Length: 387
Ligand SMILES: Cc1cc2nc3c(=O)[nH]c(=O)nc-3n(C[C@H](O)[C@H](O)[C@H](O)COP(=O)(O)OP(=O)(O)OC[C@H]3O[C@@H](n4cnc5c(N)ncnc54)[C@H](O)[C@@H]3O)c2cc1C
Image 1 (cartoon, rainbow, N blue to C red):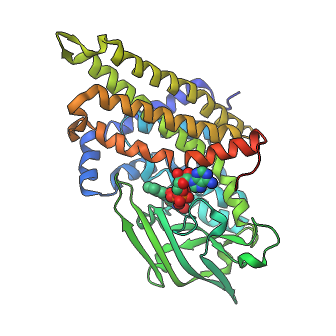
Image 2: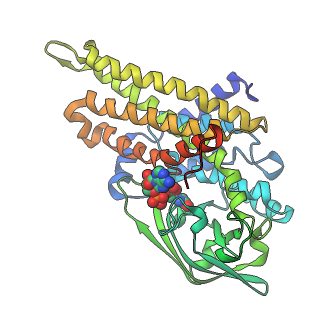
Image 3: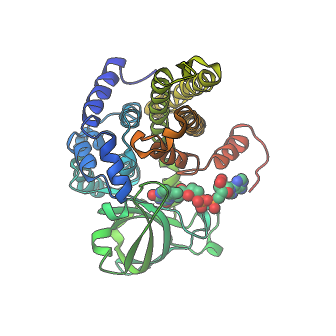
């Protein structure tokens, strides 16, 4: 059972939709061409309180659950906008909320809720380790009352638009840990200070407008007080946040699927070739109908994942399946939307090609489909471990 009523969810969707109407396709096309960050959109989301949805009321947030947060992100994408520039402000703080000290929570969370502090950079991936997070090489060595960080991260999104980063680094060398998952620690890195003290951010131009970067650390100091939780337990803390992240990203995929399906149906009804609407042909109808069925089925799994999460129950299976199925539904919808539009799919002013580029990411990041299948095979079905 959901912890939030249908009417409450509808009210949230209505207000998100009203906000999104101020940011039509032309806004996103312009930013896409210039590869610029959607500052005005993120500011509007912040001021409306949507990015503080998951922060408890005692810390100044709305105290909503994951199901409500999913509704916010889905509605953003359903309306042709993109939450990728801001979604991490919603969930990166989860590591602090769950594992941070009282002082860290009291200091940081109210500022994240109000938007005074942008905590939307999440530093895990490295060029040589990739998905195999436990092989990461960035080190944080304790020296007196601070840690000294050296190494490199890649694909760190929104780093240029964030005040803090949740950083995962190695505090115990690989050959000295008792268990594979130990020896990594999580830090709150003040990026404003680090920028002038050994941290270099280099933007990476990607096929869509995503503000992602690579980051180099050259003797960057982090106060010991900024360690989150216990030293060496960082990998577990990061894993703890994955279910929420996967479910939220799945909700964005659902929104994309809805956008593509609506657009495809409208065009198929409107466009006449051989003297009749192209949507009259079953060769056009069936793939749209199939994408719709995929969207509906994956919605149920994503909603189930969010409800289990909100009830404090285990949800890894549903969160992983929801992410995979929703990203496949959005891709199927994107594919038929392009096909239905024919040549016009490739014209920027239709927004189809932009959304097509944007939605492809979800089968790779934040986790690739193969790794989800591997999780299901090993942890749900009991098949032998393959790596
Ligand atoms: C636009 C963008 C934004 C991102 N933002 C962030 C961010 O903010 N913070 C962050 O830390 N990371 C971020 N990432 C990184 C993202 O999480 C990784 O790209 C993703 O997890 C895949 O890792 P990889 O690119 O290193 O692929 P690799 O690990 O090199 O894998 C390459 C391919 O091989 C497959 N593969 C690997 N091992 C196996 C196996 N054992 N069995 C079967 N298949 C396998 C993978 O599924 C994948 O398809 C971002 C990435 C992108 C592209």
